[in-house]
Length: 154
Image 1 (cartoon, rainbow, N blue to C red):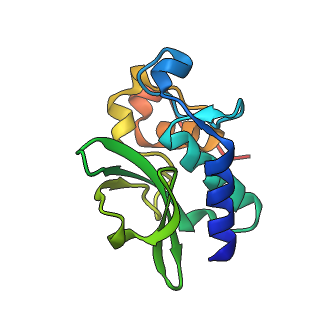
Image 2: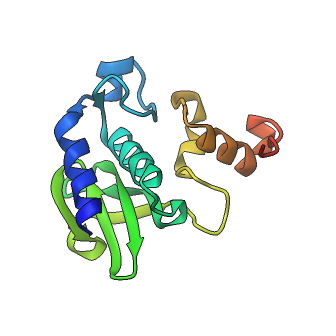
Image 3: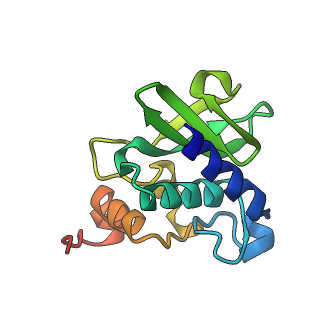
Protein backbone atom coordinates (compact mmCIF):
# COMPACT_ATOMS: atom_id res chain seq x y z
CA UNK A 1 0.00 0.00 0.00
CA UNK A 2 2.91 2.35 0.63
CA UNK A 3 4.03 2.13 -3.00
CA UNK A 4 0.51 2.83 -4.28
CA UNK A 5 0.18 5.83 -1.97
CA UNK A 6 3.62 7.13 -2.94
CA UNK A 7 2.77 7.04 -6.65
CA UNK A 8 -0.62 8.70 -6.11
CA UNK A 9 0.85 11.50 -4.01
CA UNK A 10 3.71 12.08 -6.44
CA UNK A 11 1.38 12.38 -9.44
CA UNK A 12 -1.01 14.65 -7.51
CA UNK A 13 1.88 16.94 -6.54
CA UNK A 14 3.47 17.13 -10.00
CA UNK A 15 0.48 17.61 -12.31
CA UNK A 16 -1.34 20.94 -12.58
CA UNK A 17 -5.13 20.52 -12.74
CA UNK A 18 -6.51 21.96 -15.99
CA UNK A 19 -9.78 21.17 -17.77
CA UNK A 20 -9.63 19.63 -21.23
CA UNK A 21 -11.44 22.65 -22.66
CA UNK A 22 -8.87 25.03 -21.21
CA UNK A 23 -5.94 22.76 -22.08
CA UNK A 24 -6.88 21.33 -25.49
CA UNK A 25 -10.00 23.23 -26.57
CA UNK A 26 -12.13 20.06 -26.54
CA UNK A 27 -14.77 18.77 -24.12
CA UNK A 28 -12.91 15.60 -23.23
CA UNK A 29 -9.52 14.17 -24.14
CA UNK A 30 -7.91 11.18 -22.42
CA UNK A 31 -4.14 11.51 -22.47
CA UNK A 32 -1.07 11.25 -20.30
CA UNK A 33 -0.19 14.62 -18.76
CA UNK A 34 3.15 14.77 -20.58
CA UNK A 35 3.27 18.56 -20.36
CA UNK A 36 2.55 18.55 -16.60
CA UNK A 37 -1.14 19.45 -16.95
CA UNK A 38 -4.31 17.42 -17.03
CA UNK A 39 -7.72 16.65 -15.62
CA UNK A 40 -8.94 13.75 -13.50
CA UNK A 41 -8.71 10.98 -16.09
CA UNK A 42 -5.22 12.12 -17.08
CA UNK A 43 -4.09 11.78 -13.46
CA UNK A 44 -5.66 8.30 -13.27
CA UNK A 45 -4.08 7.19 -16.56
CA UNK A 46 -0.66 8.41 -15.44
CA UNK A 47 -0.93 6.66 -12.05
CA UNK A 48 -1.94 3.47 -13.85
CA UNK A 49 0.99 3.75 -16.27
CA UNK A 50 3.54 4.28 -13.47
CA UNK A 51 2.16 1.40 -11.37
CA UNK A 52 2.29 -0.95 -14.38
CA UNK A 53 5.89 0.11 -15.05
CA UNK A 54 6.68 -0.64 -11.39
CA UNK A 55 5.35 -4.18 -11.74
CA UNK A 56 1.73 -3.99 -10.61
CA UNK A 57 -0.56 -6.26 -12.65
CA UNK A 58 -2.48 -4.36 -15.32
CA UNK A 59 -5.70 -6.23 -14.50
CA UNK A 60 -5.62 -4.87 -10.92
CA UNK A 61 -5.55 -1.22 -12.07
CA UNK A 62 -9.01 -0.22 -13.24
CA UNK A 63 -10.08 3.11 -14.72
CA UNK A 64 -13.28 4.13 -12.95
CA UNK A 65 -15.95 6.78 -13.54
CA UNK A 66 -17.77 8.14 -10.49
CA UNK A 67 -20.17 10.93 -9.54
CA UNK A 68 -18.79 13.23 -6.85
CA UNK A 69 -20.64 14.94 -4.00
CA UNK A 70 -21.97 17.56 -6.47
CA UNK A 71 -23.17 14.83 -8.88
CA UNK A 72 -20.41 15.80 -11.33
CA UNK A 73 -18.58 13.16 -13.36
CA UNK A 74 -15.08 12.32 -12.15
CA UNK A 75 -12.45 9.68 -12.99
CA UNK A 76 -10.29 7.79 -10.51
CA UNK A 77 -8.08 4.72 -10.52
CA UNK A 78 -9.34 1.68 -8.59
CA UNK A 79 -6.60 -0.67 -7.38
CA UNK A 80 -7.58 -4.25 -6.53
CA UNK A 81 -5.38 -5.75 -3.81
CA UNK A 82 -5.54 -8.72 -1.47
CA UNK A 83 -6.61 -6.20 1.22
CA UNK A 84 -9.54 -4.89 -0.86
CA UNK A 85 -10.23 -2.31 -3.53
CA UNK A 86 -8.75 1.16 -3.10
CA UNK A 87 -9.19 4.45 -4.94
CA UNK A 88 -6.41 6.75 -6.12
CA UNK A 89 -7.86 10.20 -6.63
CA UNK A 90 -6.38 13.50 -7.76
CA UNK A 91 -8.73 15.30 -5.35
CA UNK A 92 -7.28 13.54 -2.30
CA UNK A 93 -3.81 12.22 -1.49
CA UNK A 94 -5.20 9.57 0.86
CA UNK A 95 -5.65 6.12 -0.68
CA UNK A 96 -9.12 5.13 0.48
CA UNK A 97 -11.20 1.94 0.30
CA UNK A 98 -13.71 2.39 -2.52
CA UNK A 99 -16.68 2.44 -0.14
CA UNK A 100 -15.21 5.30 1.93
CA UNK A 101 -14.76 7.82 -0.86
CA UNK A 102 -18.25 9.34 -0.78
CA UNK A 103 -18.48 8.78 -4.53
CA UNK A 104 -21.25 7.04 -6.44
CA UNK A 105 -19.62 4.55 -8.77
CA UNK A 106 -20.95 4.69 -12.33
CA UNK A 107 -18.65 2.56 -14.52
CA UNK A 108 -15.46 0.66 -14.07
CA UNK A 109 -13.08 -0.84 -16.56
CA UNK A 110 -13.93 -4.46 -17.14
CA UNK A 111 -11.26 -6.96 -16.14
CA UNK A 112 -12.01 -10.16 -18.03
CA UNK A 113 -12.58 -8.42 -21.37
CA UNK A 114 -10.21 -6.39 -23.50
CA UNK A 115 -12.00 -3.14 -22.68
CA UNK A 116 -9.28 -1.01 -21.14
CA UNK A 117 -11.28 2.20 -21.44
CA UNK A 118 -14.56 3.40 -20.01
CA UNK A 119 -17.41 2.26 -22.23
CA UNK A 120 -19.25 5.57 -21.86
CA UNK A 121 -16.50 7.12 -23.97
CA UNK A 122 -17.63 5.10 -26.97
CA UNK A 123 -20.88 7.05 -27.18
CA UNK A 124 -18.95 10.30 -27.25
CA UNK A 125 -16.20 9.22 -29.67
CA UNK A 126 -16.35 12.43 -31.68
CA UNK A 127 -15.48 14.45 -28.55
CA UNK A 128 -12.71 12.23 -27.20
CA UNK A 129 -9.22 11.52 -28.44
CA UNK A 130 -7.40 8.45 -27.09
CA UNK A 131 -3.63 8.39 -27.22
CA UNK A 132 -2.80 5.22 -25.33
CA UNK A 133 -2.33 2.31 -27.76
CA UNK A 134 -4.20 -0.03 -25.40
CA UNK A 135 -7.23 2.25 -25.34
CA UNK A 136 -7.30 2.47 -29.13
CA UNK A 137 -7.04 -1.31 -29.38
CA UNK A 138 -9.79 -1.75 -26.78
CA UNK A 139 -12.15 0.64 -28.50
CA UNK A 140 -11.62 -1.20 -31.80
CA UNK A 141 -12.44 -4.46 -30.01
CA UNK A 142 -15.67 -3.06 -28.54
CA UNK A 143 -17.04 -1.31 -31.59
CA UNK A 144 -15.45 -2.44 -34.88
CA UNK A 145 -18.24 -0.90 -36.99
CA UNK A 146 -17.27 2.55 -35.70
CA UNK A 147 -13.54 2.19 -35.11
CA UNK A 148 -12.56 -0.26 -37.80
CA UNK A 149 -11.43 -3.86 -37.50
CA UNK A 150 -9.43 -4.95 -34.47
CA UNK A 151 -5.68 -5.00 -35.01
CA UNK A 152 -3.85 -8.15 -34.03
CA UNK A 153 -1.48 -7.83 -31.08
CA UNK A 154 2.20 -7.98 -31.90
